[in-house]
Amino acid sequence: MNRRKFLSKSLPCVALAPGLVQSAMANDRINMGFIGVGGMGFGHVRSFSSYPEVRAIAVCDVRKEHRNRAKAYIDRRYGDQACQTYNDYRELLSRPDIDAVCMAAPDHWHALIGIQAARQGKHIYYEKPLTMSIQESKAVRRAVRQYGIVFQFGTQQRSDFRFRWTCDRVRKGMLGELQTIMIGSANYVPIPQQPVQPVPEGFDYDMWLGPAPWSPYTHERCTRQWTLISDYSLGCISGAWGIHQVDIAQMALDSDDAVPLETEGTGVYPKKGLYDTVLEWQVEHRYPNGVKLIHMDMPTAKKMASQFELHWMGVLFQGSEGWIYVCREGIWAEPASLLRTRISKTESTLIHSNNQHQNFLDAIRCNKATVSPIDAAYHADLICHHADIAMRLNKRLEWDPVREEFKNDPKANRLMNRAMRSPWHL
Image (cartoon, rainbow, N blue to C red):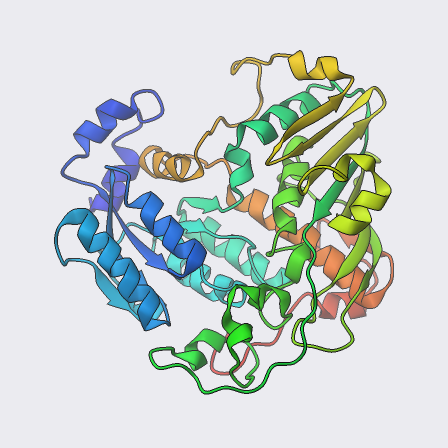
């Protein structure tokens, strides 16, 4: 039995006795590799390498400065020079001694890296969003299921007390009959097209583009703001923020295995400039039980509901007997007595997690589901794609949950896939 199988099958007690398990694994840690170690990815490097059950042994990034910085941090952490660096993620994934990977590459790379990691038997901590298209999302889900790896989506609000507290009360019917869920997401300021610039030394720009269409290099294209360019992301409605809140709506509805069946809405797109993802939008999704999920940019949300006016981007649950507004700043409710209600761990129907990283590591050791598993990721991602397609076509869409395609709509179904630049393909 190899080490990966040993870790997943021989230590089922971690959730009950983490101290005991850490002691037992002192000489047999989970070896981790990291793909994409820029801003968010470097944060994952620092976090995961702090756990005694983890040994960070490899990093990959197309920017030499990013991978060297991550290696230097890891080597200082362990007091040696053992961490290896890679420009090509396939070389890292081919290593048999890596048990798990954290993937924080740009959105347009998610599907290819995720599928290859699953095929190599690596457990994956997978930054959101899932993919750039519905067909890619299907392929990732299929690979995760086929190869039986542990999957944790980077929707860390599931491990945040405020969101878990809110979802518990919605599920328990404390708002009466749930009627509407409103989401306020990020928005942005457009910028003009940027001048073409030389590719910086140590940056493999062709590999950064990968499956995306070729475009001339400019610095702003490859900063964190690539999330606002449609070749690399769906923008604020998904990877740049929105999927976090869509995921919480799904969690509150106990709907990780389903999505709304009707979607319609409109969006405003920049007429010129580098950023071309949706700028302002209002999309309504309707679940079979009649609940409406209304996803908006934050300025639009503020016009729709006063709860968004004074607080950060969040989710508003409205029922027949009250409302709860939750964001990363706090929780507000009407009636205020809702804030004094208690639900014990034994009464809760949610997987309990206070730490998304630790929950992932525990799931590896116990061979069990994570708090943000592949089905939750797939269906939250699907809702964002439905919104994007509905806005681009400016029409109402109906979803067939059995065939997993739009009903009688060839145009919408064609938008379920995206072409990849040769030689990349699913």
